[in-house]
Image (cartoon, rainbow, N blue to C red; front, side, top):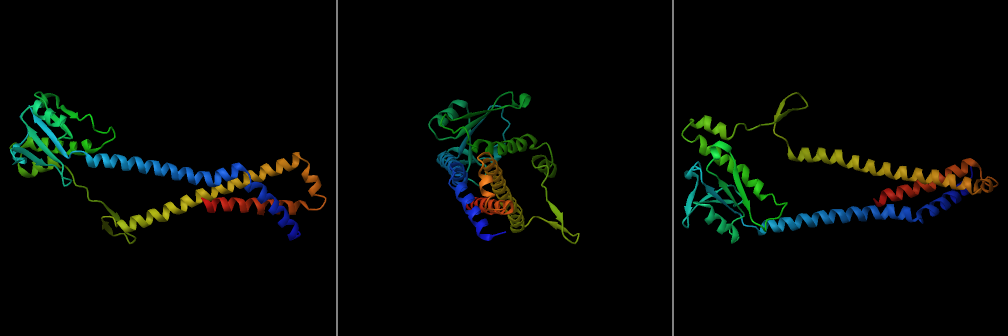
Amino acid sequence: MRVQRIAAVARFEFLSVVKRWSYLLATFGLPLFLAAVSGTVLGVQTYFLSQRAAESSQFGLVDEASVVDRSSFLEQNGALRWQANDRADEVLLYENRDAARGALASGDLRAIYVIEHDYLTTGKVLAIESEKTPLLSMRGTSIEPLLRKLLRKSLIEGRLDGDVGQRVISPAHFVRSRLGPEGEEVVGVDVDEALDLLVRTTIPLFLGILLLTALLSASGYLVQTVSTDKESKIVEVLLASVTPEEILAGKLFGLGTAGLIQFAVW
């Protein structure tokens, strides 16, 4: 096979492919599309995080069933407050719904929870949120498990001893372990090791998918060019000066280079 003829065929096939709109769109449009999607998702997340930061971190609680243990609340500025978690979320105890709704309407509260008179029978707690609350906000759902814990503690107060009552509130604390390379039991997971394993697993898989996509695209171009040459009778003209092996080798080199460039851009 003559190298010059192979190079000429490869150059022709490469230029004919890279000038196509479909190739340019797939090569440069896909990264731009993914960047636009990522930017949109990041912008939406930033918006909701800013909305969440601007919200009040206080919640109201109305105990119409008189089941909540008041010992968990501290009196500050004339109000009973319960520090629900380390993120400065507070629960204020109100005597009636009207007072709690007034604070909610004025923007002092994020939401109010009403333990109705028939709570012991139905177990229902009415949650009332502000009209300004974003629909996708998760702050309310983060406080509700803490309220359930408070209710469990209040319901068993004085009915069970300390250890049993604590286990009812917190039934299990799972401590995970795994077998090491020599069969020893290793407690806990090394974050750096887990991250390294994730990177070593994800990156080759992602690059393999991109390479496979580029190769399939290049093979599709090869089939398309062969069928086009056959229909337009170009093959008969080429065979007058180039052997079939040189034509195939040139097409493989040219289209393969186009596929590798596409993979490199991605």
